[in-house]
Image 1 (cartoon, rainbow, N blue to C red):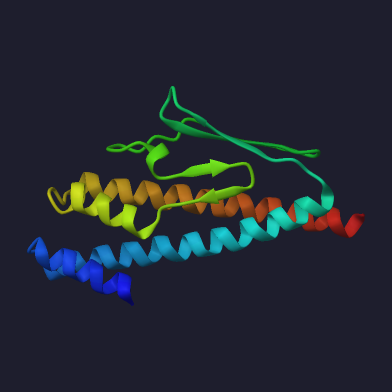
Image 2: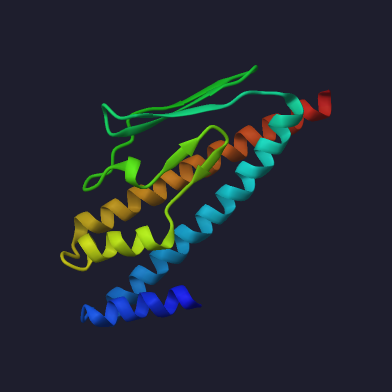
Length: 157
């Protein structure tokens, strides 16, 4: 609730129109829900992996300003290469450390809105948000798929 009040205050301070505020709030909550589900599946997946003793490696590709996620498993390799968002670098949004993946915090989300979307709210900025959502959905599906494989392996063992 505190976050919502801060968010409203920021929008009012910038004389932001109410329709745009509603849209941004919907976008924020959709991203928040995606992250919540992603974290649950990721946690479940890491617990199963620890039982199966499968190692996971994630690292940045700073040359392309993208994120390479490489999962070197006993049974399959997943590769995601060269993900680039239009106006800002993905390395500012996502921090990886082996099995932990922490994604956009509320303050960073507010900073992005403060710096970019309030100053120029146009189709390009909406496309950026769409790409972020697409990226999160893709990772969510990927983690869910890996989770299914791991549970099947666990049942076999």
